[in-house]
Amino acid sequence: MDHILAHIKTRAKKRIFKLVSDQSLFDTVKVDLEACVPYNPDHNLDEDSWFKIEGFSNQAFCIDLLKKVYDSKDYDDLTKENFSKIAYLFAVQGEDFYFQKITPSLFVKRKTLVFGEAAELEKSQTRLVINALPDAVYYKAADILIFKNLATISSIFVGIDELYKEATKEEVEQFLEEPFIGTSNGYSVDKVSKPNRKRIGLAMKTLENMSPDDKTNMLEYIDGYCEQKLKFDQQNQKFEISTDEDLKLLVYGIEQRFYTTPFGKEKRCANSVTTMG
Image 1 (tube, rainbow, N blue to C red):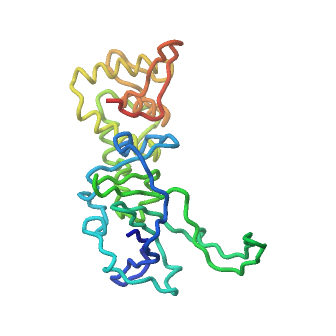
Image 2 (image 1 turned 90 degrees about the vertical axis):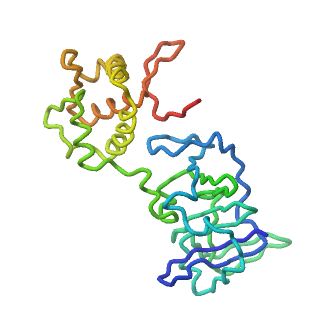
Image 3 (image 1 turned 120 degrees about the vertical axis):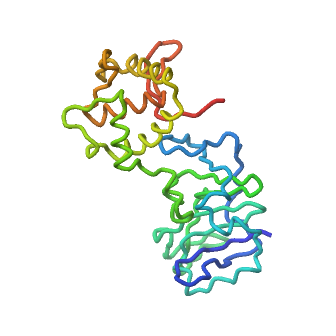
């Protein structure tokens, strides 16, 4: 049996309550889990794509609800006075869990005309708007969570925002001290933008897995694509970074985002990258 439940904002230990039984809240979301994109904060999703986190029940930010066997008898019905306290909804549909974050703007109270056999004026009642798509879906059998926007679900899965955590000041300083980087024009850690701090976190992981030969090839690759935009000292094997845009190009190069079109031979930079295999 399907159920619709609510997690409410309260200091009490009991926070999850039943709303509706024997009904589905969302249309079934059918996706190819293999085609979903492992979460990357610098990836721009296509309209019909989803991010995924595999082995979700083993993550520190997985909620207890998903770690145990669901039993509707464990939850009481939500009382009227607590309707306005709903923080998020989740629907148990088959073995899967569908989530929607609730914000004040989703509570609507207005008169409406209802068209049935005849037009009828319906008095104002508080309604809660349900989105066409859930904010997240947890497929229990596969132990995979899919979602579109990490910020949207960060209040549901507390701590999940660590996946897009910016590099710390110390990490940025460490990155700027890489032997192939030289700063100029007063550019320093304090001038590194928030988006670049996120990119640096990813770039540092990439560098950790590179051999010395890989790094040499990387410098040649970046210089080949950015020679008009980034100054490269061949003798000292250093890129001169004087602006935040310089740093972004360098990080994109480390992530191998530059490519040449096979027919027009046009040099381009990919805003998002999906591994094909």
